[in-house]
Amino acid sequence: MTETSLKSWQEVAPHLIAVAAGREAADLVIRGARVVNVHTREVLENWDVAVAQGRIAYVGPDASHCLGREVIDAEGRYLIPGLCDAHMHIESGMLTPAEFAAAVIPHGTTSMFTDPHEIANVLGLEGVRLMHDEAALQPVNIFTQMPSCAPSAPGLETTGREITPEDVAEAMTWPGIIGLGEMMNFPGVIHGDDKMLAEIAATQAAGKTVGGHYASPDLGPDFHAYAAGGPADDHEGTCEADAIARVRQGMRSMMRLGSAWYDVESQITAVTEKGLDPRGFILCTDDSHSGTLVNDGHMNRVVRHAIACGCDPLIALQMATINTATHFGLERELGSIAPGRRADMILTSDLTELPIERVFARGVTVAQDGVIAVDCPHLDWPAHARDTVKLGKVLEAGDFVIEAPEGANSVTAKVIGVVENQAPTKTLTADLQVADGTVEPDEENDIAQIALVERHRGTGGVTNGFVSGFGYKGRMAMASTVAHDSHHMIVVGTSRDDMALAANRLGEVGGGIVVFKDGEEIALVELPVAGLMSDEPAATVAAKAGRMVEAMAECGCTLNNAYMQHSLLALVVIPELRISDLGLVDVTKFELTELFEEN
Image (cartoon, rainbow, N blue to C red; front, side):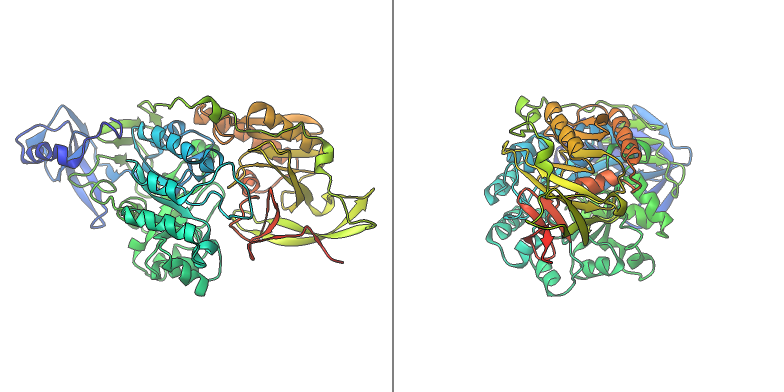
């Protein structure tokens, strides 16, 4: 039963009422469950649930009056609502919506609120529509937030396509659009930018939710100005003070545990220690790559982590179910086990470890014991969506040369400093040597080269700089066409020859991630759909991504989830220092900055 075939409550209400009253038979009855009620935060022992036409008809101590075609004995296990991911980017899994759904359904995720701003930067409104349309085919709920910021920071980067207020207004009429994606251009909101405010206004006029993104530690007047601009939530908090500040302003604090973002433990103390009302807090993943999905889980992983951080299991479940549904105006539709709601449920034998033993979506078993039991249909992606890497020329080592100021024997250069497990970077400086007029990286002090290669219009443009934190040794290079948010190509390396080889290789395969060592390719993940996604199964992509991680380690990298750090080095809306096709960007000032400091 897909989104398009699921009937509305209004259409099936007479039948639901008749089933609950015992006049008609249910399609499914789950008997003898310990039903977790997230409305009252209690466990109801030995209760039954009756389902009809994909929705819950009856929840109570005895459904024998409406037994139907299928009866399942819960055997005393807990029956919990299907898990909801409140903020995430499907593209970060390197998978299409269909393959992402197939990967997370066995983990108990039955609702996702996705922001496809990655593909919006490459293919614009058409890309959003393609993601929206494939999402609608799935056997679980995938709601789409219309991306708000492409480019994320106008004047600091050039995207493949731009999103306009007119695009936002049009998207608000599509059936699966739930709101506006994260408003990353927070300086634009703070300063009353007409375009940003028009997008927010169009969303609010449609009665939908505005997503937030305030990536600054400053909780002074700028933060309050941003809150006044309309965002209803924010996932960029990294400490308890951030979480508290947001909920005090009437925003939901979305606490994320992705593949590289570990922001739950540092914020959940606002509930577990400060005692704030948990209704204002929501769990999400933001970015999860395929390896995490296959090996560790999805929202079940986040809930388990929140519990391990001291959160009461029932509160943690609320943060991943009813809180999310309420936030998006869907409390009557999903997020709980209650009459009229979509029959999205999980059977589990333990509320702390949360083994996902059976998953129901719209009253159908969609996974059991970790194995998916339904098909996840694919969209027929157009050919031009697979032809998006346009380099304009064959790149050479000389394109990655950083020329020193005339006559200099050494320079003081700004360096992007990677911070493990966090999205922000640091602005570092380093004294680097010059050889034959070329500034050289410094392996001994962990300073490699970074380049941003233009890939949307074939200009042949390359922006060069320096990065620290990966720990690379010897001759190597890593390139990726996943380069949030403009999604040009990021190349990091210690060898300019290998950097050219890596960049050209991605041009050949239509996008992805590649690692070269000593002139040889040692790992490749092909991502032909918009240079961002594979339509292969998650396990296949995860295996290739796993080899990519091993290859990075073979080149000396010791960072946790270093690929995620690599892919964010061009994200010019998160402090402190980033790189774009226009140059080096000081995100504390939202302006371009010079690579070299004056000596």
